[in-house]
Image (tube, rainbow, N blue to C red; front, side, top):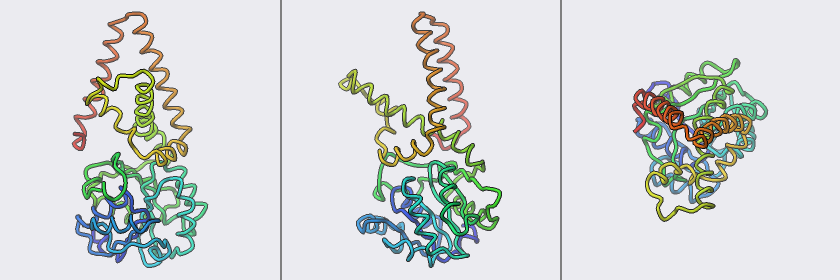
Length: 292
């Protein structure tokens, strides 16, 4: 593990759910020798995270965790970021570095700029790792390993804070990608938020048209994301709704063309679309060691 991280005496994980607990487990597995403090609203969640070995101490008091920490990782649902940043600001000190796991970045950075005393010490991050599981019980020490982590520094981002945050995510085995917050939201709308919306719509179509008796692994795998936490996903889709709508509009144009070739009985046109999609996906998978 990077010496920069080992010099940190205490890390606060603000949100001991699936991803927050997985980060704690990952830090421990990577050899982090400092103290990890978890924050959650319920004692039951904290007890579960501690039982898993992800945290050394749990508290419902954000101030208790933040004031003695050098690094804070915000891992709460997007709808709670404003309140969390407000609570952090009450106990924020010059030596505190803050990062997050939020699925959108423009909204999170705007909230950090509004509420934090030292927004330059905040480094936006989005580890592209997750599961349809919920809570600390579903956490995994290797959840982040081999996955991309998008870092979205701004012009005023503190260089020391940036180096520390990048070292932390690297210690979990992640591949770092830097981009602007806007570019992040455009790209994740396409490859993360749109697939979730499509999984939901597929389930709703099946609920309307039927077919459950013959549905098998293909339908199960295609609709896996529909089992994700609904309040959390609603927050994500609403926070990035402008880019999600753009992605849905693009999908709509593609869907119109798909319907057209079927309606005209154009097997050649249909085959060309299927072959192109297969080739694009196969090329992507071939260059991604983390895709199984």
